[in-house]
Image (cartoon, rainbow, N blue to C red; front, side, top):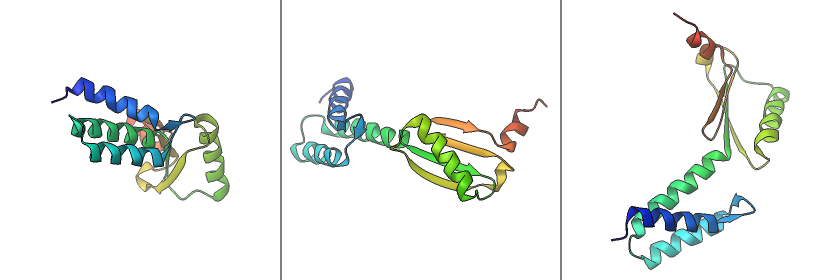
Length: 128
């Protein structure tokens, strides 16, 4: 059985092969996953687990979630999206959510980065 270290090394190598111009190519990802699953080299399950984790993390890194207490106007939403695009690149996907429990303000998550400008976060930060 192949060691976890070797599986991580091989998965990272396969993952780097799926990047074109710094962006993940979905057709390459599918082809690599199918090739590994079909050929079934020693330790292929470990390789596929690490590979799928790397792909998932990259997809999350390119996805932004904008949460607000009330629905935002089109102009305000465009301004927020433009600002996020300016700082993180133009290949982001966006999702919006209305969360009344935020009380007011915005909460933006891009990958593992979170910017919380909500009233709820400010209230929770107050000393007791």
